[in-house]
Image (cartoon, rainbow, N blue to C red; front, side):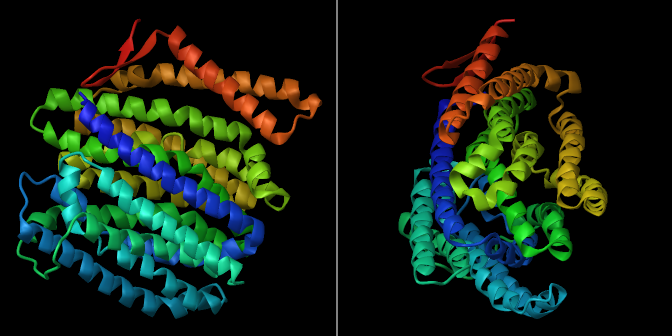
Length: 479
């Protein structure tokens, strides 16, 4: 069962990520009004290399420490040392790859961009390992403070650079300053005296090994489409696609991702009780889908309105990209719940296998989609990949948690019915109000409110009740 302590911890992280994403989004609105899609395209291209290297060399210090029964200073020193060594390797790889990367895409500006952007992940790797004490206690207020400070610093830096005429370097400043400021804040919130040591490496090695393998494949999964598009479409089109893709994943990144961190800690606390673990997984997956499904589908229904309202007419084509891409991330929250479960029971090898299967499908679908229908084909390929991977997630959930496919479908089918009812009603309402030519913001608010009401009413009609008690949050099925 998910205790209220875990729910409160999730609340802090969700609020932290939501506020951080709001600041990011507000920054994007300002930059999008000043910069051109091509500016976003060239930075997106540089970020592709940096994100791949960052993800491949990810060292899950916090996750590795969280799963241990007890930790001391030597564990923290080992975690810090791994992060420090990671930073050195990232620096060497990025510097070595920057020039060849610029030749591949025939743009020498990428050299400085890539090197500058690498400062972000290097700083993130030096985050105070002592912050894990708060994670283990399911206290995430400190994480909220450090992330909020980082986002404010990034916002101020980006606005300062763009106001000074720095062009796309404002995007770079926003990316780099957030982890730098958050890392500084982490040492104030969780004091730790750095010391280089690998004394406890044996307690990290197996976990880090499989996790790193999974990260390599994950990096290829998430960046494959951008790498391919960067080689075959112009930077303006790549910029539109990148912005749409980033907006599409906001619900899962801002709400579900942070909420799964305390859930992983809660899973770890009951890892010796298989039956409780099974029930906890079902509840986590259900709540993840309950929150994210209507948001993603709602974004798919109104993406064109969102883009016109927030980014302006020059981004109008991005709206159609967003509508399709939002559907491709509907199933991601299910994976996020499974991901936390696999780490909690010390099975990172399962994550590696899932990501490997994802990559095999994605390479075929995206390559074929791009070849046949350019950017639109790439987006359709992502949709098909998402559908195939949902089946994969359910199979692995059966293997890891011992939850049958029928039980998993029973766990979330009412969410699917409510989402379908919402989608149908919103489409009908939108068609009905189209001749009236309402202002964009009025139409968007009307559709969102109506869709939320239909979704809630359908769940209620299906017998679903949410009960918030003093110690737990419950989903109750009346039938």
